Image (cartoon, rainbow, N blue to C red):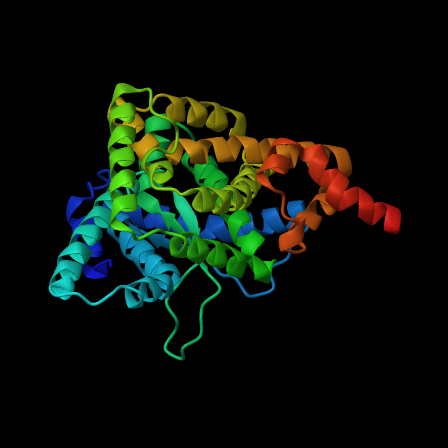
Length: 360
């Protein structure tokens, strides 16, 4: 259903080059990012009280094409089992193989085009889903930093490079700590992704209705009056919306926790953190019209809302019950907040923290 090679080749061909950097400066940036990722890990561990259960090393530093290749690999790991199941359930009709081959190339091109856009925006990420190693073992994950995007952003914002790089590392290392100290969380996210995909309805009439809805979402985004989520929400059934609520809850928690930690740790180790945060927020808000349209269609505006709601949830809970009690959120699937609890932190405290306190 997706030609992964076409996705990579399309993305690499379309991605814009990074900023012009002298070779010596590029090498220095790569070396410093590796060092700062290790430094940030210690700060995050001390502040959050979370401890990785597997060894972690410096971040992997990549360019934009490298980020595209890594993400296609990740998509394959999480999506292929569900895609194969969906394909096996299709009826064999004359011409189906040819139609499938053409369709998979088109889908690969679409995925590559999306990744080429995102490759110029992402500063870093914790890659949850990696191909197995030569022995067939599944890696726990990898922290990746996109060096040209970090350099380009710090230049545009006119901020101290060392401080900005450490600030970014604090956020991304928080994600690595979340997943390496909580082994069940990776499987939970993968289950949600596959459940979402397998809930897709393949009926042609339903697909035509969704396609029309997607067209309306595109028109709305161009006019500036479309709803946040655009193409993502246009293709969702009621069942998928319910799954997406669970996805949104865990991503809001993860992203908000990352934002909370990077700012809370910041004043101690990043002297210019207030200036960086102010300019970073201003940069987000000042996106050009094309960026705003693309962000809406790809659901990136929803992601920005996740940062805000998730960070507010973490701040409220930590302020009321402390970091140790907040960390009960990582105990199991059942202790994760729902989207309703993300927006009402006291409801999560009453459900998870206070009953435990009474029992003790």
